[in-house]
Image (spheres, rainbow, N blue to C red):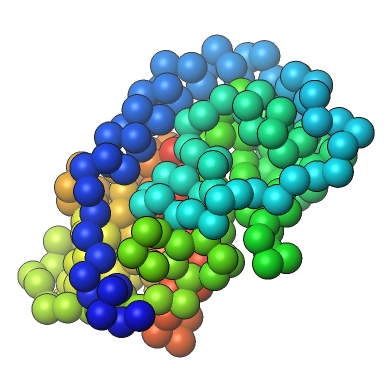
Length: 221
């Protein structure tokens, strides 16, 4: 496992896909939000209503924009048609400012958390080992800290970097214990308030291993 993790490399394809998703968000989010109330209503009735909820498939994680066949930026209508809407597949967690966050049934009894921003998928959160990249990377994997770089955005003097992510780039009461990449460039933007409403990609680590992924096209804390 460790050898495959150290050999893990990102291709340009995921970056292009996320860039396209971000472009869709930027072009459509304003008009979409005008058609959705703060209660989260205004979505199309799903054709899956009345059927047994499906499990999110396949067991695939695509860095850093897709879990199963649910991708950032894709139409909410397609996801609801495949996996169900509120009360019929989507288990609502919260609603806020026109967004609806809920979970779909994942593999191995897990939950795939999806947030709809208006009419598109705006955020995906995953804490399951069942979804992995083609090289086997996923929850439970290790990310090597690597060499110490001169600080640019990290909180500590020693900045660790990995595929554009920065270790412990932000904190609340304590440092996050996570790898963070802000924006669509090769290098991360500062993980600060001025970067809110931009794409954020966060990999949380617990006890030295990946514990959770959070991909968000328009992050606000």
